[in-house]
Image (cartoon, rainbow, N blue to C red; front, side):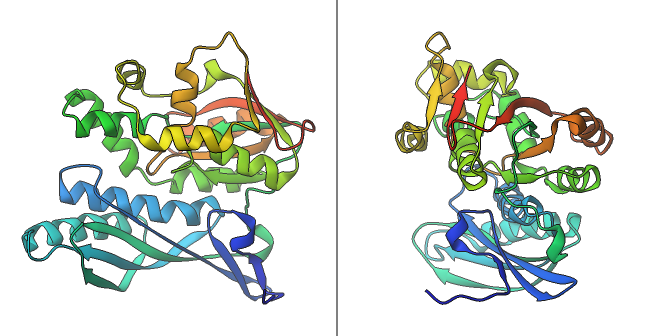
Length: 314
């Protein structure tokens, strides 16, 4: 494999984005993400897809600078108004993030897909990665879990209007404020919670940092409707794949409800940040997050020295 001394974070590190050093004071962050619609409204789908793509830059401690649209569109079966609304939603979220749309690419495809390639900037010495967690750190989560379960209920037309409204607002929310708070307080590491679920991404952080984690199941915030929908079998296929992939390094205490596995392996769309912060700064971080408008935050566990790479859920 080719090596480059300026590559700070590459694809070999299972992190949220790539980081490349341009000078002693400037590095660029590059990421790309796109997926099929998870809501019916094209404008809202555009907002969610943009927030999801931008999140990777925020997870690296960076500022998104430019973006390019990626569109797969079934021109023969869908009207252009759907395309326009989807792109309008994405653009408005970019404007909110003070990120400039510089172009994009589209192809004809029988299945609609949308996302963005995003480039951000960060100081080379201030990059935040999933490899920085240290024993004694507290683990802070900045969004509720359960988007995958509720999205599955939405597809089955079984989700309540209240649940739809809450989960949509969460998926549209940028992780910008959470990232800024983390940078101001001074944290050791960050990852964002997306398709691998809470424990999947926490596990990547544990392995990259060569540490273990204790997770307090009752402290982890989730949408209350997700518990009811999961009990009714409205669980996405990705949950089972995540559980199978993670089973060798996640241990649940036997007395815990089976629901915790459903919610902790639930694949998230535009989920929150999992932040590893020095224990003596945890409450300071919570205060900073809330002052910036990040309301659904919680300390969900701690980083331990051993067993390395293992997550203990109690």
